[in-house]
Length: 209
Ligand SMILES: *[C@@H]1O[C@H](CO)[C@@H](O)[C@H](O)[C@H]1NC(C)=O
Image (tube, rainbow, N blue to C red; front, side):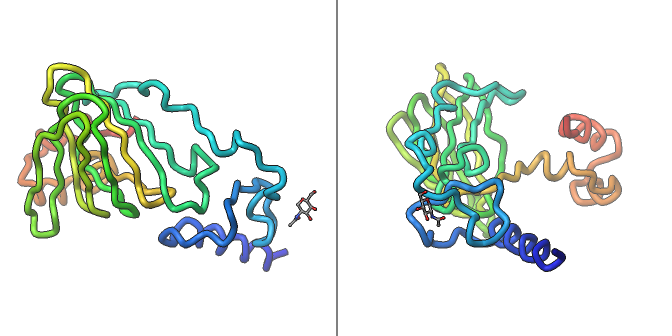
């Protein structure tokens, strides 16, 4: 019993932590009742076309305070992607809407502008910026792990479709990670040169809700 729990623990961590490995079967719709490594996937004879179709991004998601509505289509919400090493996102921007600086620790992203004009860019490890306005029909690539950002600079709404070379790219938004995670005040004040009033304004803004 204990051994079984241990094996399952490592199995789950393996799936979560590894960079996406090559599949060893055609596909692997997760088996929620899995007890061993041999039955991690549902028996493929029980899969249907519906396992490979996702209908959740026909329209935009809910807009957040920065004027962005982003819906990630990763293996957590679209099980058909499991083991396939890729995923997708739909992002809609209000006029002036911003996708705050963020990065995906496990994937390169390629983003296609379906509608609109979007100032898009990333920063490399030398802090060099690569940014410009990209328009309907253009794509931009954001290399794995690089901080990147977007803003709708047109006078109409914008939509971007992105894809990732991981079934679960991960998302870290810089403002929330820094000011909404509970790092000690003294550390942040010194790191950013803020006084406590300036810091508490930012902490309030990015507090988890
Ligand atoms: C999958 O299901 C089919 C049909 O019921 C069965 O013949 C086959 O043995 C099953 N495969 C596994 C690995 O359980």
